[in-house]
Amino acid sequence: MKSPSRRESSGAARKARRALLLTGLLFAAAVPPAAHANLIQNGSFELPASGSTQVGVTPTGWQLLGNGSRVDIIRAGYYGAFASDGVQFVDLIGGGIFPSGLKQSVDLLAGVTYHLMFDYNGGRYVNGTQTSGRMLEYALGSLVSGSMNVDDLNAFASNGPTTPWQTESVVFTAPSSGTYELVFSTPNGRHGSPYVDNVRLEEVARVPEPFTTTLLGLGIAGLGLRGFSRKRR
Ligand SMILES: [Ca+2]
Image 1: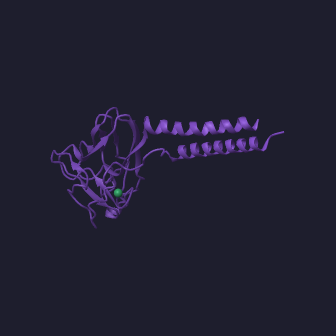
Image 2: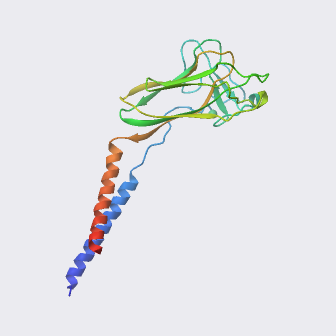
Image 3: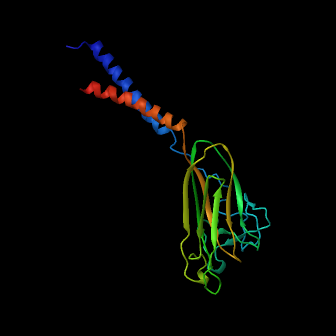
């Protein structure tokens, strides 16, 4: 027969284990899985805002390539245009100097995994014909780069059948901390296209800190669970 004092102490131990389990679970849950803030400023090209198409503008937070090339901001409704996000998108050709485009500097941290995403489209001419050999090129320092032909794409309802905005998505880990340049450009063309909108660069994983903290939290929860199961046998 168990003495009352022994029952009391085992009840107290059970309470302590329960508290430990709860603490561990709360600790594990409290660790954010990832920060999702967009590291790109004005990635949707909504600034400067304007009621009409802006020719030769520098989008807020971005820089022109520095070789004399220019970009335009196009607003939804222009020749039936539609944006991917918000009401404006950028046209990488605003003049006749190539490569034509824009760039933005971002600070990255060594060992951190990032997700770069952006939407892109192309445009038919006013008479409905497709562009030819129109390329969109992008790079983030020497970490990430790519190019795509946009001749089959069209964001202008007035010029022919439209195509949905396409999404490019790249996950990479920065090898060293530093400032990297995100560049969007096109090597040739006349007017209009390629178009870019909704540029996002988000941190998706940081090692080792949150990972070990999560493991620590799960470890504490595991200790509590082990105590429970041993008691129930
Ligand atoms: Ca936009």
